[in-house]
Image (cartoon, rainbow, N blue to C red; front, side, top):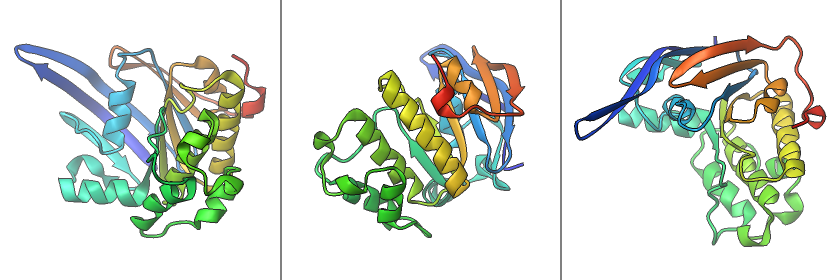
Amino acid sequence: MFLKVENLKKSYKTGDVTTTVLKGVGMNLDQGEIGIILGPSGSGKSTLLNIIGGIDRCDSGIVSVDNIEITKLNDTKLTDYRRERLGFIFQFYNLIPNLTAGENIEVASNISISPLNTDEVLNAVGMLDKKHRFPKELSGGEQQRVSIARAIVKNPKLLLCDEPTGALDFSTSREILKLLQKINKDFGSTILMITHNTAISAMANKVYKVRSGEIVESMVNKTTMPAERIEW
């Protein structure tokens, strides 16, 4: 099992008030699979993704990625995990505005142990001809393509996507989902995506529905749908 989450619990305390966000969550993905976590705002899906990504820590439970139990890592080892094994795609791109598309990707490449070639990655996301453009000169969909390229140039084993189509229109969203399927096929990346859009679940191998900090339903798709056929 490439990604294994067992009995994950997380609470936050504000003054005298304790808010329980995750209540013993469990899930798994095999290498090369696409997984989707579905849930409304406040369901705990972002917290779950952040713990898997080593951005947040759980109160108890186990997260294992490629046989590394990241819930046991100290801060230094957790930084190494994020740098060496993980790619993160955000909803709002988070590109550095005063760097070109190519330079934004090279920032990630320069801190990676075995990065892919920048031009190869730009070509894979259809942005090689815009390598020297700044983020303000790109559309939202183009910025998201650069964000995806920045994540995959690290050659990560796990690609985490936080609402990657949340800020995009329908047609652009479909193009981004097609691109993620292509990356999954071409680079063999295991992809875990959180979304509130149930239609996207058709492209995933495994789907987990989260509500109030619990997995309320899990589903395995024996056949997955190409993104261009998804309707919502």
